[in-house]
Image (cartoon, rainbow, N blue to C red; front, side):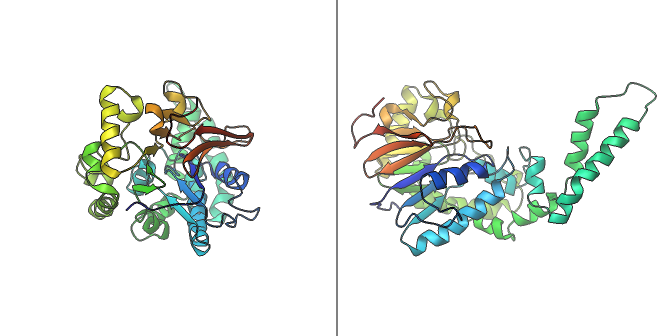
Length: 331
């Protein structure tokens, strides 16, 4: 169901485990104070999914956003975290993009303290080993050992499973959200899926979680969580072309939206895009906010601000106008 918003909405793209970047953006836009308590009043916050994988801070980011969701509700604000494909994969047994640090983030403090010494002992065993034939490279064998022995793997699977606290929270996240004339999804929404409507898409997600149990591969290939043309995976709209523009217009018309805002595909990989920059496509009707966020003190930080009918790009250096009202975007 579409909701009306009369206050500013901050939109943060795919985090890829970059908890520190999330904190920097929230503080920089003054939605939280130094103690990470909600100070946004009746403002809105939309995070586009893909909190997990490729970095180590996904679980902290999710816990912070869930806390802010509760706090914002008390002041008339609204925090919405969309479901991304990496949340689905990690929660349903596809750990292909998990990192050592991500597993460790679910381990106990005692396990984390003991881990460096365990790695040193494993390395020593590999160095001392003298095979009869060729000694194969040590570093990849050490990495393979880490994957098999890093603490936190079982805790991650339990916590993100159907009975885990965070797993239950993930299973409540919406696939689609609409406010202020904008339609938000992790990836693109093609017309066949748009026919379901926002509420229908979110209901389909709940049904798909129940059908999956704890394994992604238990789902049909054409299901919401696996279909490459579905709203968690589609890249055809951002790649453009005549058919893509027609599909975008059709989907927006079906849902009565002015713009579609998506993540999933980094702006630097698209024509006209750049790392750390929000990208406008299709005359500003398609807004890509996956700006390539990643941890580190000198990495790009950027987010989208919806201020009534206007769109702004926020960076630590200031803001720039992306569009005003419903007119063609400023370039």
